[in-house]
Each structure stands twice: as structure tokens, then as C-alpha cells.
Length: 140
Ligand SMILES: [Zn+2]
Image (tube, rainbow, N blue to C red):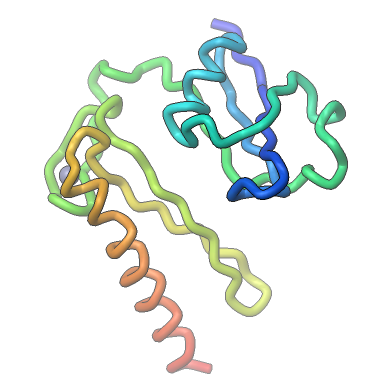
């Protein structure tokens, strides 16, 4: 399967503006579908080349990769309920923190189809990043 990159931008006043999301998918329809799953309809444009994205918007905020093996055998533990789930049922919340001169990426996996897990993910992420920031403050 050939995979292509698609670039989604946001409009003025929308969350994440200015910035773009790179979606790696087999075709533009699938890319669009993945984008809607993640961001709903709150985005403005779809492009097939980064050069077509307005220079002010060329800040990469996320990358979504179409999973060829989704639904097969790969499983991940949900960070909220600790259950091992199929790849297709797990979403990831990602947050980047800049500590000193280092960028740290935090990934929290959660059940996409479980409301408790979806609602718990933000609090879990906050506690996780607070813990790391606290540890950093202690050593500095
Ligand atoms: Zn869960």
C-alpha cells in the first residue's frame, strides 16, 4: 500500500491555529476521515504538499499515521483502566513540554470507545506532566 502525506490546517480563531497536522494515509479520503476522527470539523484546509501550506501555518502540531495492522493483533494497555485493548480501540493523547532546552513528548493511551477513559485522559495527562515538572524543579 502506498502511503501519502496530507496536511491539514486550521482557520483563524480555531484551536490549534496557526499550525498543521500531517496525516499519513493511503489516500485523501482516508486522510480526511482520520482528521475528522481526531479533530471533528474544526479545521480549514487539506493540502497534498507542505509547500502549499501557508508559511504562517507551517508549525507541525501533530502527526496521524494510518495503521495498516489496525484491528489485527497489536494490543496496547490503556493508561486509564489498565486493560489491554486492540490497536484499533486505542487512542493516544500527546502533549509536548519544553523543559529547559529539551522537548519532551508525553503519550497517554486510552480506550477510544470508553467514555470513562476518554474523560479521564486529560486529568491523567495533567498529573503526569505535573509529576515530571515537579521532579525537574527538585533537581534544579
Ligand atoms: Zn481504558
